[in-house]
Amino acid sequence: MKIATFNVNSIKARLPNFLAWLKEFAPDVALLQEIKCVDDAFPRLEIEDAGYNVATHGQKTYNGVAILSKSPIEDVVRGLPGDGSDEQARYMEATVFGKVRVAAIYLPNGNPLGTEKFSYKLAWMDRLRARIAASLPQGEIAIWGGDYNVIPTDSDVWDARAMKDDALMQPESRARFRSIQHLGLTDAFRALHPEPHRYSFWDYQAGAWQKDHGMLIDYLMLSPQAADRLMASGIDKGPRGKEKASDHTPVWCEIRD
Image (cartoon, rainbow, N blue to C red):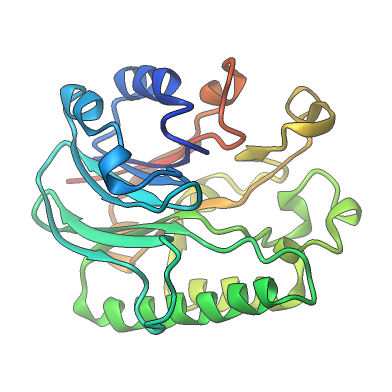
């Protein structure tokens, strides 16, 4: 089973590129972030015509996540539990292929520091940790994939000094990311690719893509049962080089059925 996470940065703006990627890469499951549309505006018919079932948790203009699967999508949960007042569409989980639990995650950016946005980021990460901690004892093959908006180490960014005042690199953000991983999760990409300076995001500004000035912020985090089945993983840089590309590119893994 091939699973990919992809921050598409507006599904409608990237639809031709996205459909081409679906056809070429053919993931069994795709976890999408920043679809930037309400559920009714999602291009469901085009994606269903490509062979996928669709579940969305959308929001006008901002945020939004989706799960695409070649199998039926069951037991869908929309929204991250723990704060009934949170209206941002950043989290959805579901069961695919009858036994694999997947979650699409768009973790808050948190910038600028010293504002409620950073506090919201940290509180959201605490809620995510609680959700994962409650799920793991069920012993499921589970994958929490998405844009985590955290740069875990200095080797995950082109220039750590240039990013030192960014919310993605703050000690509080990094500590929470580690605490999530230390629940017993495996980073599918880093488990097989420990080499430094591999990236999944390149800003649109200052020729970052052409200069390879990127950062690794998109992750597929595996439960122990999923990690035991991990066969391969990688970063598909092809979509980032297309015209009108998203600033992210897919991260993927394969697990044994």
